[in-house]
Length: 58
Image (cartoon, rainbow, N blue to C red; front, top):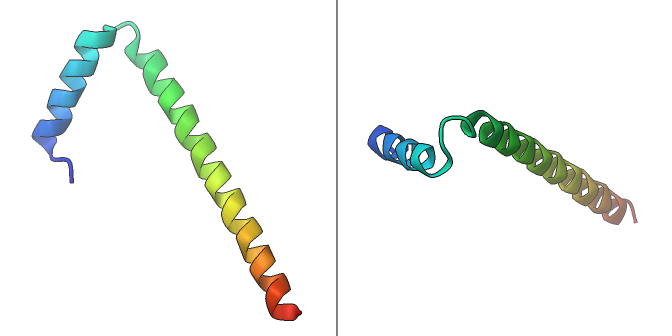
């Protein structure tokens, strides 16, 4: 698991690489990507459950 010190180091490196002006845009993009990933995962799980229910009914 990533600790506090590692998170601070990662944040400083990102700050140096992208600059302070790009951080909000980068965070927004990462948030959208995370949301899309969760949405796709939920859809896949629901499809697999539906397939499993059809197999049990047959």
